[in-house]
Image 1 (cartoon, rainbow, N blue to C red):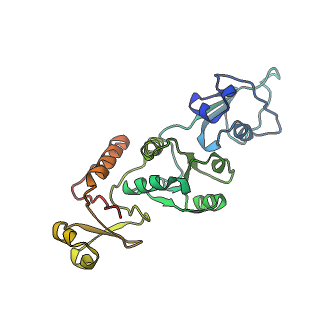
Image 2: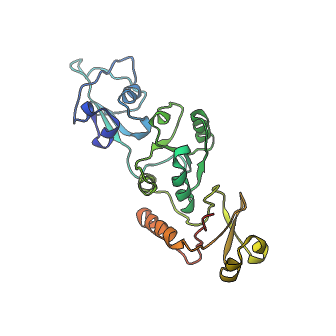
Image 3: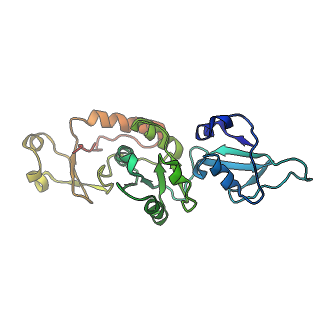
Length: 252
């Protein structure tokens, strides 16, 4: 058996070699074998059995002519990775709240729930055609899950870079609410005057309100940090430009 080195970190150390022997019983599928190695199927790309492309449901057989054992080759997912829905929509588990906020700031449709059970996350991912992003390998082993990804990185910056590199989603910075993910819409100062601090009313003219939760946003003092995040993401994905009309959301 041969496994792409990019997937070695998911396996035991004794398996981290260019080629190793593994039981390929004809009663089990290729997908079952991959799971026993610790590799979630969502992380697997092209599969070949003795050079022939196969799917996760394939059952290994002996070599042509009946001699020797078949050689299964496992490649990692291509990047950028195609998704069933384009542009992709994401669903994040409870451990990725900071990443959810970053993705929303970049205008990427991102759902996030705290306290949701695994079964509920899988059901929602299916129902809403979302790619489930998680740090939990076990969640990605669920056979009912059509699309998911194991997020690499310990910091939110590393995690964001990994998701952008893997999926290359189109970006629309400052169009979604970082809190709930609903669309932002321009709102006049007069309509929200009673919700603003005095110094803000005196110095800020452009405001947005979330069409979902109603939170009001304006270009706050921290805008340079958010602009740096947006600029780096646009360079990485290679789409869009930062416009002077964009409003960096003020963090509540």
